Image 1 (cartoon, rainbow, N blue to C red):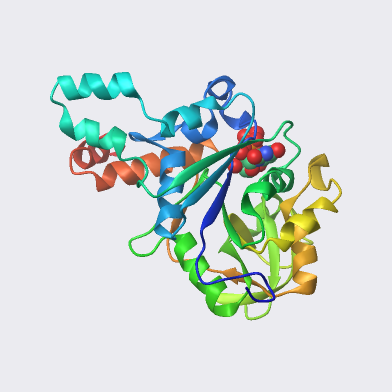
Image 2: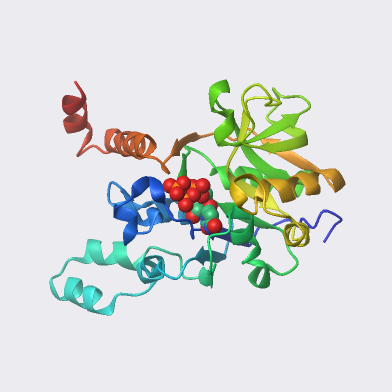
Length: 292
Ligand code: UTP
């Protein structure tokens, strides 16, 4: 392993899914936000597919005590499978049995209290050990024709021996919703980050390049998170630990290829649903008629 802790292949990906999902209450009283469907697949399935596409074989879910649905979803459902088998519904059977490739394993870690994204990532430390890892926030759904966003980032991280954050331009008046990066060479597909600021007011924002829900980080981030004090909103912010990482090693902003849907809010979830409906030959006509 080299100085930034990066190695050729990204094996482990963390899914912080312990947030309260207040923007989807009351549904999220009992259904984890990541289980909300875009058509027939929950958000977590899109995220997991992306991780597998990037080469991951170990998926680490940071859940809270109430989110058993995610573990249940990836577990075998013997009764259902037997019923589908007996009914001769082989295509559906293959669907429920094929949620994960056989070589991929899931590990579940509990975040006892929702103390922030940084704290959630820190909860994965015992599983990750001393290797670079990916982080996917499943409510940012990213659609690609080619390589997944995380696969693009993992390649960049290995090639450049660096941490990598996915970034996207956002309207100036929305900088206070994101971590914002200050980069040299802002127009390049991959640029070195000088600073990150969590949720700055538009007037103070160093740019309009926002960090979206994908990260490739070295294990060093765990030590930095351990010494990170609660920041914006009283939460332990991942962005604050990344700011410390930037001070000591190379961290790049990656303008990934792909379209992002912010499914952490209703507008984004509706957009994503319409996008996938338009791609589906059985639904496209109905969706178009409905919209017009
Ligand atoms: P959000 O800021 O979207 O918060 O978290 P949330 O609780 O999920 O949703 P709202 O804002 O109340 O509607 C960003 C990501 O960080 C995870 C969330 O699950 C989501 O994937 N997270 C956040 C944790 O795992 N733990 C936390 O303590 C906070």
